[in-house]
Image (tube, rainbow, N blue to C red):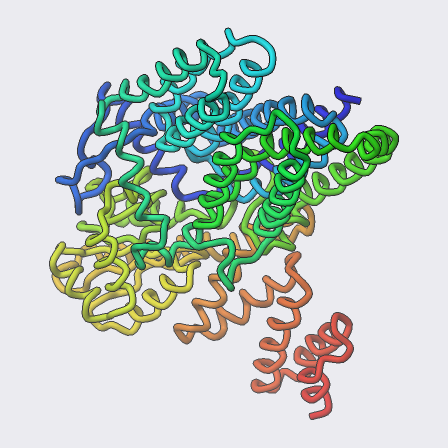
Amino acid sequence: MTAISLAGIAVLAFAASFRKLDDFDTWWHLAAGRWIAVHHTIPSVDTLSYTVRDHAWINLQWGFDLLIYLLHSLGGPALLSLAAAVTFVATALLVMRVVSARVGAEIATVVMIVVIVAAQERLTIRPELLSFLLLAAVLFVLDRGRQFNDRWFIALVPLMLLWANVHSLFVVGAFAIVTAMVGTATRPPQRLMIFGGAALASVVINPYGLSGAVFPLKLVSRINGSTDVFQSVGEFGSPFAAAASGTSVVAFKVMLAIGIVVILAALASRRRGFDWGGLIWFLGLAALGASARRNIALFAIGSAPFVGSCLEIVLRAHPNWQRVAVRRAPVVAAAALVAIVGIATTMVTGAFYKTEAMPREFGAGVIDGTFPQRAVQFARDAKLPGKLYNDMSAGGYLAWDDPIGDGVFVDGRLEVYDTPFVTAYANARSSPEQWQAEADRYGIQTAIIFHQFVTEAILTERLVQDERWSLVYVDECAAIFVRKNGNDAALDRASAIRGAWDARTAEWLSRPAQRWPYPAGRIEGTRAYARLMGSIGATDAAIAAYGRLVDLNISAGEEVEHRLLLARYFASTDRTADALAQLGRILELDPSNADARAMLAR
C-alpha cells in the first residue's frame, strides 16, 4: 500500500503544480538570470529599472534566477512548467516519507492531501518552489538523523549552503535546525550540534556575505502588517482577514485546527518522546501562516512532520485507537485514493480553478491572455518613446521583454523598491494630480498599463479622459498611452499600424470557444477587455466582447450577470429578438431570476 499511496500523492502533486506560466514575477526572475548569464557576475545594485538604479539589490535568489533562465534557454516555458512540477512532486514525496514513517502510509496520504491543497495556491515559478523542496529535504534529514543514523546530519551543510543562494527563505531552514537542537537539548546528538552549527554558519557563503545572511530579517516588515502599503498586496494579507477565501485558506485552517488538537492530545498523554523543539517549530510556522497568505504553503509543508510525530504519540498512548486505525487502514486508503483522483481530475480539467475563480490552467507553456505580449510588440514596432511608465503587475513581464530598452518603472522586486518608493507609486495610482506629477518628474512619454486589475483599470479610464495623453493601443490585458506633447512622429507611427494590431486583438477575441480544459486565461482577458470597453464608452465593442464571454465556460452566476447586461442593451436598442434570447438563457440557468422575469414581462 505504501507504493500505491506514494504514487497517488505524486499524481496529485503533479496535477497541482504542472501549470502554464501565470505569474508576473517569473519574468523578472528570468530577466535577472539573463543579466547574470550575459555579464558573468551577480549585481549588487538594481539593473532592471531606471527609477532606482542607485538602490542596493541583495539578490539572494540569484541561483534560482540563473537556473530558470538556463532551463528557459533550453526548452522555453514548457520546460519551466515541467521542472516546476517535478520539483513539487519531489517535495511532496519527501514529506510523505517522513509522515508515513510515523503514522503509516494511509493516514499520511490523508495528511498530504490537505498539505497539497493548502500549498497549491503558491505553486508558481518563483524561488519558493525550491524553498519548499529544500525545506522538505532539511526536515527529512533531521528526521532520519534523529531516528536512524546521525550521519544524515552531514547533509545539512550543503543543503543550507545551496538554500542561502537560491532564496531568502533559508532562514526557515535555519529555524528548523535550531528547533531540532532544542528538541534534543537533554541528549543532543554530537553530529547534529557539529553539522547543524556548520550549516547555520554556511549561510554567510553567499555573494553578499553577512549582509546577505541577515537580509531576510529586513524583509519581515513587508509581511507583518506594520507597513500599510504592502497590505494592499493580496498575498501579504492574513488568511484570517474577513475577505480571505479560497480552498487554500480553508485547508490551512483545517490543518491548523487538526494540528492543535493532535498536539494537545499528545501533551495530555504524558508519554516520553514529545518534541518540545517541534512545538516551537509548529508555533513559529503557524504565526507565519497567520500573518500572511503567502506563508500558507510553508506552514502546510513544514508542520506536517511534527503533526505526524504527535499523532504517533497519541496512537501509542491509546492502543485501542491504534488497533482501530490499523483495521480501518484499507478503507482510509481507498477513500484517500478516490479523493486524489477526484481532486486531480478537477485540476487537470480546470474545474478546480473555475470554482476558485483563479486564472490558472493545467499544462505546459504560457497561459493565454495574461501577459502584455502583443502590446510589447506593438510598442516596439511603433518605436514608442521612453521613459516608460508601467504598473507593478506588468513590470515583471516588461523587465523581460522591454520594448523601450531603458528598463521598467517598477516591478515585483520589493527587496529593491523601498517603502517610500512603493508608497509614492501606490498613492499616485489613486490620485490623477500626483500621477501626472510623477510622470513629469521622470519624463514619462509612454505608459503600458495592465488593466485587468481594478486599480490599473481605473488609471486606464482616467488617462483615456486626460487630454495630455493619447490611447494608441488596447487589447485584452494592456493599454498603451503616449504623451501628446512632443511626440507627433511616434503618434503617427502608432496610428499607421494600429488597424492591423486591432485586427489581431479581434481575432484573439473571436477564436472558437472551448469548454474543457477551462480556458481561464482567455476568460480573464475577454472579461477585462469587455469591462474596459464599457468603461471608456466603446459600447459596441464591449457588447461584442460580453457576447463572446458568455459563450466561454464561465460560472453560471457570472453568465447570468452578463446576459442581463446584454438583454438590457438589446432592449434599449430595439433588438427585441436578441433581448428575448438572452432572457430565455437566463431563465434556463436561474428560473426564479426576478430581473429577467420583470424584463420579460415588459
